[in-house]
Image (cartoon, rainbow, N blue to C red):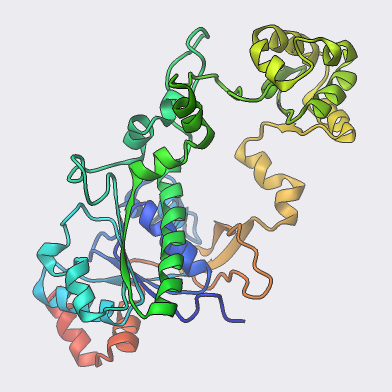
Length: 407
């Protein structure tokens, strides 16, 4: 069965995470995604290890786990577009593409004739998505932007970490490059919107995506907490600024998460906890009151939760219909029965390792399901194939390009 985007060709000039993540989403949906890399080194993340993928003999390959996380279903083509002949090849590929993804600094590709105006002249229907730290305009436009820096500058770290009056207080980054991931998601969404517009108008367009814009947009309720009050939200550790109780609590053998979303759930929790009187206490009877008196309520709950194990709390509260759960490490995540039932680990054939593990796409489409066609490619694995299929080059022409170190 054809994927939803099986008619779409994508030229992915990006590297590291935000751009490749967008490209992988499009590839999972069926698009033919050509990853253009530097000869000899390729995407920076190929070297971002350990850990590296092991070959059949248990030795490290050159394929870093980081790289493997964002590049499946793509074809790798190595082209040195600092050379005029390499620029010509990329322009010819772009002329036949529907989408270009790139995350060079603002103006960085203009010197090679690979910026949007140059490629639009060759292909007016082209969707050209530029991903940068700060966007194409504004006083920071020329700056490089990295996820960690943007988490700080964009406010996320001011909201993440223990409260100022707790031991270990201070700003903390999220444990994955979340701003890059979210930018990749927004970029894929923007590409799909632009493709839909092109279907109606026949006209392509330029997409200007910025990590800072995405980070600020994704502060969601915290942004509005500030904009409606003028008071910057403070760090609350694992607690929620607008809902109580909605955080981690200690148990007899660890910790668990309690996420009470309404007053009815709070009453059920109180009954399971053996303190039904809490639900009738005017300080705790409504969420508004609980938020105002969290400093009183949370210690009371902590004193109660330590007398049962995590498993006991989860079992009892699930029966009562109160949302809760354990705090799993990744070994526990991938052993979880729900994760197993949903098939969130996928193993794909790989030329060096025999197989390579992947995390399944969360997109479930009934008519055009995601497919897993290619493992993350070896550097330059598809150069010859793509130059023949897309550009019709003969073997002798490819040999000349190899001799000139263009590919």
